[in-house]
Length: 274
Image 1 (cartoon, rainbow, N blue to C red):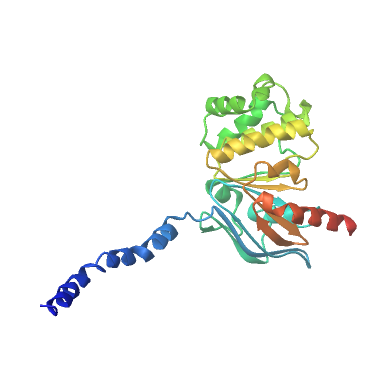
Image 2 (tube, rainbow, N blue to C red; image 1 turned 60 degrees about the vertical axis):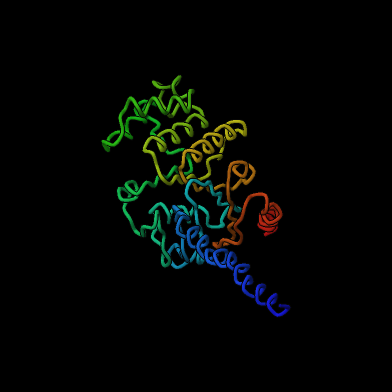
C-alpha cells in the first residue's frame, strides 16, 4: 500500500504544468501586432546630399517627422537647415539620397504634385502678396478649386482674429507679425498633411512669436505634421515633440527637447567660436 502513494502523486503531476503552456505561446504575438500597427512617418529623409555647383552643403542628411508631430530643425546659420527644407519642398534636387512623404518618393516632384501630396511650405520672409488685401491673399488659395472662399476666410479669422479686423487692408501695410499670420492662414487653408516652416520668428517680437507658436501647437494637435526650421531654439522648443541639431550639413543629434539642452548650447557656442 505504501508503494501506491507515489503512483497517485505521479499521476497528478501532469496537471500542474498544464497552465504554463498557454502562457508561453502568445509571447511573440504582441511585438508583431505593435510593429504592424505603428504608422509610417509622414516625412522621411534618407541619406540626402545636395550641392550648390561643386560645393556640397548637405552630407547625408537623415531626418524623420512622425505623423502629427512637431519636429524642430535647429542649429546656427550656415548649417544647412534652409537647404534641407528646399530639398524637401522640391525647390532643390538632391545629388543623392531620397525624400518620402507618406511613403511616396518625391525627389524632383513639381509644386502641384507636392501640393496634392499635402506638402505646404511657408518660406522665410512671410511670403504674402503685399499689393493685395488680406481677403485677396486668402482668395488665392481658392483658385485651385479645392477650397471655398467663405470657408477659407471663416477659418482664417477664427484662428487669427486680427486678420478679420484687417481683411480689407493691403498686406504690405500690415506689421510683420500680421503678415506672418496671413502666411500661416493661407498655408493652413489647404489642409496640409505636412507643414514646412522656415524661420517663423524672424524679425518678430517675442510676444508675437509666442502667439504664432501657440497656433502651431494647435495645428499639430489636429493631426498635421510640422517641420520647423529655426535659428533661435528657445522659440520653438516649447511646442516641439522632437528636435534635431544640424551642423555643417549634417544632423548631429536627434531627441526630445529636454534631452538636447546641453548639446544645443554646445552647438551654438561652438559655432560662435568659429
